[in-house]
Image (tube, rainbow, N blue to C red; front, side, top):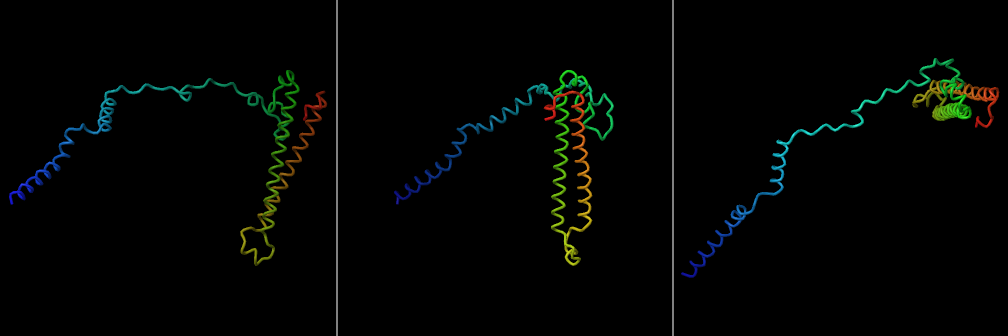
Length: 190
């Protein structure tokens, strides 16, 4: 019986020692190092002076730019944009470097013409799509989203764009004649 009591007492002491062990371990170890570092950083930030201003390109005002030559000269007729010298170069450029002057004017005329032809192509595709989707049968026309007015509107836009493209082609031809009259090389038109 005595051995059983001693055994129980030893077991009780062992349990008490194991229960007190984590509490003792926490007291001996320092606190979490990450938390300590965060506290230290917060304390330093409170005492630190405010950051200095950093200047970027957005903070520096830009120098005033001179007005472009096109804005200084009054433009001529609005329909003759390719023959207007202020839009593509000044008369001074024409004298100093005539080849660059004429090439720039022809390039602008060709770019305008290409843009107009692309827009005409897009309008033509839209018209073709609408014509395929439109039914002339009144019963089927009630069930669809397109109607004849859409097709007529597209056709009117195409006709107007064709006139614009023809006008641009005429302006390019007139520019070639102007180059020939000015005595320039015909290769500058390419």
